Length: 415
Image 1 (cartoon, helix red, strand yellow):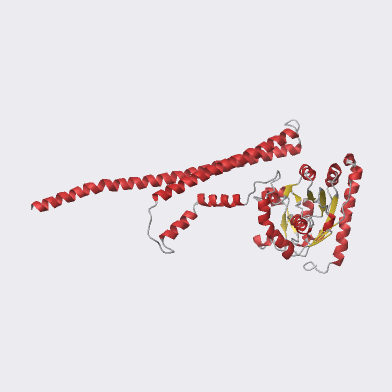
Image 2 (cartoon, one colour):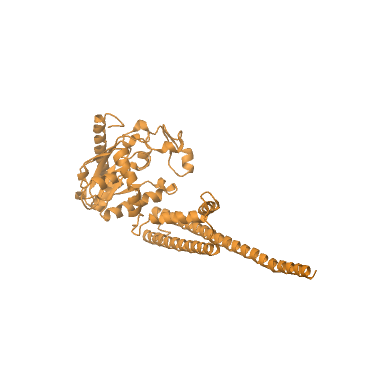
């Protein structure tokens, strides 16, 4: 009887001893979960703040660039606007790097916290709870953002120039364009020696293909076949910068937003530059008008050569007109998206995104002998009649070469 009473007493004591410990365990697990949620919430808030700030800076930069282009003297001088824009670019880069470091520190703290709170467990076979936890952790939005930043940073170079050209990214995407040049479009380039071995030159060509494929192929031709393997920069139409990522990606492998100021800076830096005077009219040319050159603007490329003394090199492209044979243009919905037109081709929009794949036509690039305009002097750019006459001369020269070469072409696909 006495032993039974002792057993009952001991059982009551054990219950009293175990109850507080279970309560402590529940409180500790709740606290751990709450701290982890707080870390993830903080990281999400930092990401939102970073995105909001960068959007505001982008809006300010666009407004400043617009005002600079319009040259509103009552707002500020062009030099002051350019200085403000440069400072905004610099501050934006610093802000982006600081916020990225904050995100990395938060992620590091979260990883350390998780490592400390996780006890070693026995080996779990593939497909078990361990692999499921790894999949869930990998799909965490913060981890995905971190992995994207790591991949993006791995393709960035510290030697990015003022126009956004990134040598590391350029080498990363170069095999794609090399495949297009050698295998897909099988480009044949003639007259590569007409491009100077050093110094500035302005290459002027006919434009087509909806996107600047012709510029990238000329860039590859000079890089691969020119004795000096020169790096070429090319002007890009404004509307391409309305698409997400497309404009910045163009900048990173050599494209520059088309403007007189940008082209002049590149020529003064002794670089070969490609311009397309037809502009959007050349890109939006209907198939029935193929290889009929549109108006060469107002002769801005002639003024560039006269102002800088750079030689002018005409270039004739044969083949790009057939990669996206445009049957019609849609402009109503295009104007809502801020682009000049939506192409209607035999494949787009009927095949969806697959319709945007360019067709494998056979390409020829004919680089003509350079035209030296230095004899006229910089003051000649004010002579509108001379500028128009020289622009027409270059246009007619390119048109004659195209017509002559089309007579000898047997097939669109095989040359």
